[in-house]
Image (cartoon, rainbow, N blue to C red; front, side, top):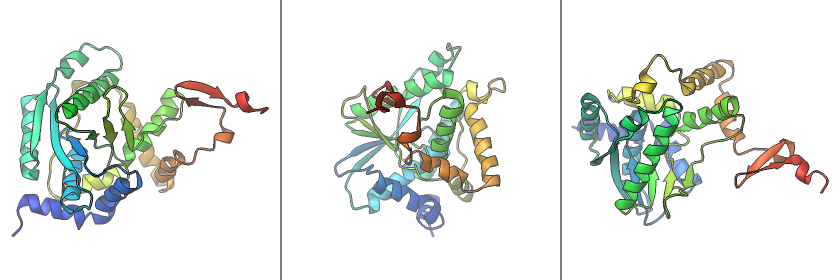
Length: 271
């Protein structure tokens, strides 16, 4: 008889083979996210996405052809005790050997009047890179998925006035030799939710007071609802938004940014 941990692992490569495992391994291959000799820090927030990522990376290490090492790091930015205990409980159920380190992010962000989520994300990234580097890692893996990518594209257009996506991997500009990878890049969020429900797993959401407050309107939640509405009109719309980032027709746009510098279509119009 299988243990709970073994049932969860089996579900990833059997029950959810098409919607999770194959898309996970496709992203690994297509975007060349894992190389021989890598040491990757899987960054776990305690949510469903990062916990699933940890299990997928573990399965890849066990059964993949490429040899690499893993460690699993959890940053405690100031969680309430019940939230922290839930993370520890889930890590035990899933058999993930996490390493927890503290930070003061929540107390710093608490003083921020504008853009608290942006500041929090920036600070988290810096702490995670630094910790991973201390552990001898050359990469950090984050749990961003397909829907995060589509939401980011729409957010950049509607609220940033620019076209910007979320790449599957990114070299750090502040931590030499470090790289960020997103192995769940092609996995839909609904598949992750179904995986958690199927295995009767309860994960935390963002545990800061800003996103839980009814006084703050989350733009990302707006995008989630918009994408859902789009799918009712045409189920291909999210995939087409995603694909637009690899099919940009430069000849038809008014301007692009190259190394941070804006280039107008007029600059080369008469050449």
